[in-house]
Image 1 (spheres, rainbow, N blue to C red):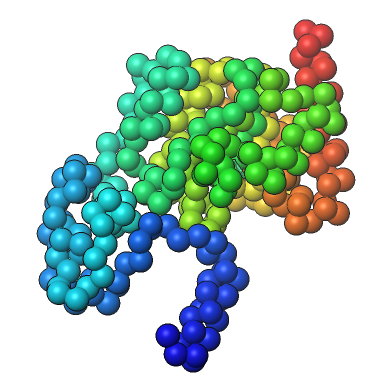
Image 2 (cartoon, rainbow, N blue to C red):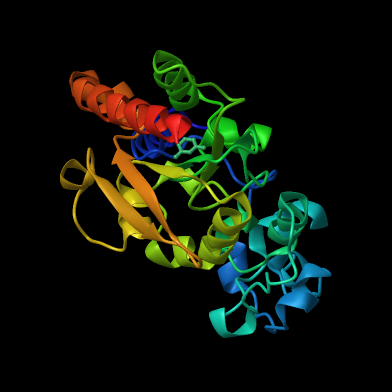
Length: 282
Ligand code: URA
């Protein structure tokens, strides 16, 4: 590679990094120029493409294109099923969290699943105190479990400050697959996973729900208000059979970036502690 090509490649990589691209999703490089020169691939159904139907550039690339092994190409270039092709999850017969976990694993209606490494459904214990975060990040994606990275470590400390730990709370997210570059999930992505979250709430019957951050708070409380307005107030989440007291607070990832906001989170934690104390007395 010439010196100027090396320089422009490294400045391109630096730019990607600044934009939040911190890993390559495919296992092998994909030659997009060769792909666009190839004749259009036949669409096929999502089921066909999952079987590796010849609808990818690996099958159709002209001579001289990069040779991408079928395994990598299948994952990186499986076409997104159109929303109308994806059946909404049928969750009525699901009576346990283990069954729900299987249903999430089989679900193809959230496009993020195709770029994520693992599904991250839940952490903690089957206890009636539920914490709902936003979306798995890089560490969660690698380990297949919510809140195991830096934000998770801070969450552990926050819980410990009011006498809670992983054995006393149930932790999940609004979605179960990492958005590339840790971007905020879209309302559509959150909506595609919402039936699973609703079913978890029905199965768990939490006494309280804590919403970590704006994305979880806005979607669960069905509002466009910002987290600074939503936090620190008990509200009701309308579950199928009853209303559940719900408290929004600041996301630990935000607190890592803005430690001066920890005082608000601390107030919210004290509200939670007080409420849990009252519930124990009842
Ligand atoms: N942030 C979240 O909202 N959820 C996680 O699981 C990790 C980080």
